[in-house]
Length: 365
Image (cartoon, rainbow, N blue to C red; front, side):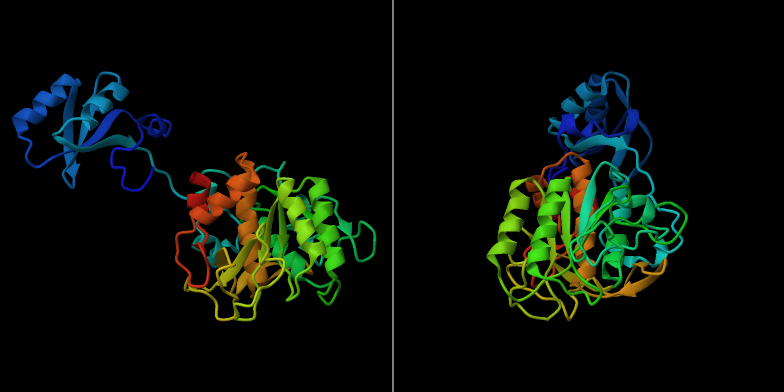
């Protein structure tokens, strides 16, 4: 419901669950008790015991929509609304979830009340590969490709890609390890960086186009460099034109100097925040940086079937990728996904255009 709209949109609001035959009504202070009872009589309503902050519960015998329309348009009524049903945020049973402050910071548990993603939706992790037999990842992995060796062995011999993959989409509510932002969405591992975490822009571009060809809804690029490239930009533009969301790390140089591919128009550039919900000291910044996400001491999956902490905008990026996967699971296209992420990022972070992402607001927008 848009902020400031006290009475809400009638047709939209009644699509949410509420107590049948009951409205919450606040009358203006000038309304007399006699006039209130007279008004309620016209809508076949009567007040129920108790009130909170001057808001009364009213039992409605007739059709609630007709009664609501009558009340919200009456000069004695400050506002009227259904008595909506609330429920606890979903908390997954992954034992390390309590240590994953990043998921709480972006309100992922509240978002999971709305959508937990669809297995049919997958995101490409274009990186050092992913440990294929990690207990918290193996059920999520599709067969990908290794552009370093030219084969389908996408196992991770560095550790960076495995950590990134877990943040985006580790198996969640499976009773082990950590939770992933995208919950049910799956992972396409694309290896373009070697054991030292280094690769060529040619291979990165090939990895992007391969991900598009395979049908990834989102491409995660927790990588970058200081040099612009027509080859890389063309690959990014092709992905966007084919309906794919591209998310990239803003870089870790505490600088406003552009990082590529994050700087490109058709990329969501991601800065890092810390546990205090402020921009991390190392994070790049500037008008070209779209949003921010947690990136300091982030707990995720590691090579060797374990779990560990890493820091950097590389860790921030898959939070946005996982969220984009949730939004794609709702049937949104890439334009709608980018808009939802940007326009609901409601924590102001200096050095970013939109602020820190809010998964809960995004999936409800």
